[in-house]
View 1 (cartoon, rainbow, N blue to C red):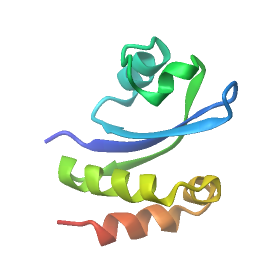
View 2: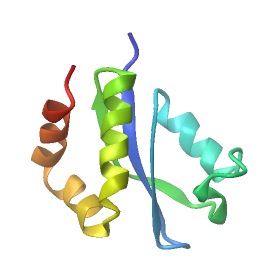
View 3: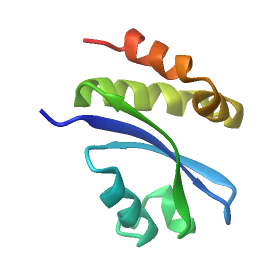
View 4: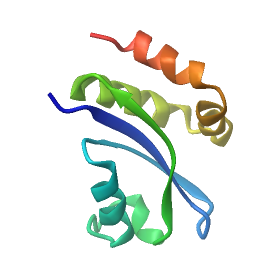
Length: 97
């Protein structure tokens, strides 16, 4: 069983964040930076880096956590995810199967 990863990307050039989930984070960043996803919000920049990532137990859990993070729509929340590991642990617990 593959681990799914919820990720927050950051672009310095656009000073913006992007949230997603995948099983291959390295490939996904390459895809975002090469504009493979023509309709994605990541098309406005080519300097996306991993700001935060959280390994999940299943795709269902990853999608639930991804949606939770997207609903927060807060730079401070994204920063707190990285600064305080317990926030990610609480999300894993809240959305466990």
